[in-house]
Amino acid sequence: MTTATAPADTRMRRIRLALWTGLALQLALAALPLLDLATLDTITGHVEAAYPDWSAGDVALDRDAITWSLTGIGVLGAIGWLTALARARRGAPRIAVTVLFALGLLTSLTVLSMGGEQYDLIVPLGYGLLGLLPVLAGLAALVAVWRKDR
Image 1 (tube, rainbow, N blue to C red):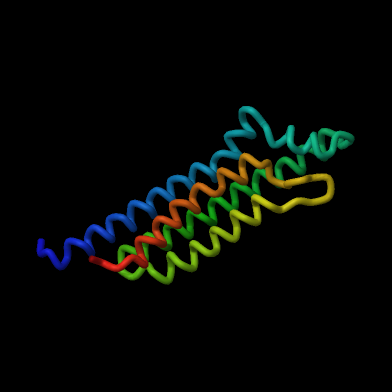
Image 2: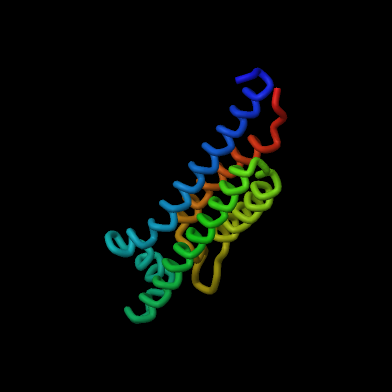
């Protein structure tokens, strides 16, 4: 290995590590609402707190909408991470990582802050905050792709 390619190899390793970390976090976040639904069912409690007069059927409908929305967002995010990894494999991830980071940040902040009717936040705060974890991996990837080789 020559010294000219060593910094570029190190940079690409950092980019790939950040992208794989982001993908792993995104997949975990996609599965989390379904795991919660099967075990603790905290989203039902969140809906019931906002709408105490609703019937069990109405609560279940809203709970399912929140659960499946979070899972769908997680799956779409995973597709984004795979796209960025494919671009990194070709050696040209800058534009893909930058655009996908912006989309991921916007989506995470929207999920974290969106309220409605009786909800202070439609998505429970814990889920919104956890949704920022892949954004941190995206930030690491973004810094790595734009950082100059030394």
